[in-house]
Image 1: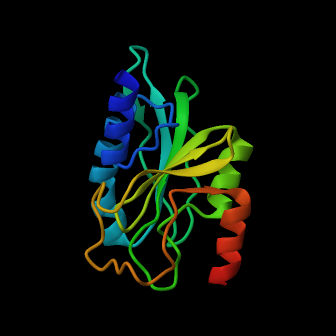
Image 2: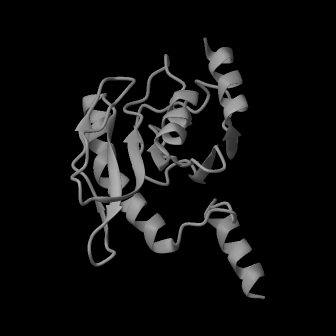
Length: 176
């Protein structure tokens, strides 16, 4: 019964059952992006950084680094910062960017860094890049976090719930 309840809960909130994060981590990530999304949309820039744990195992984040319209390179976290994931936003909606899912470069960067990643999109989606499974997994769908009022759902092809590197590379080629 407990397993069935967890499955129903995950389906209601678009959270794939295979994700290992606990609800406290997910709540922290959503709340963090709720504050950062208005800034990234208004400035039409990506912002990035790292999520970690403090000495009392509370969730914390580095100060967001302002990036460019389509890229961001986070400042190095303090040496005593216990990283559990990277994070970045995809800025404002644009007809010229396929920004509703992580790019192959986003997933590749998390894999090579050996850290999981969270990405928020202009449509209000939040993705989880699993660096071990080498997959991008939709954590929560449209309007899960603050979204750009200019977002147009039909501007790009439909979004799947999960991508591996091969699928992301195919999507990149299709959008070129």
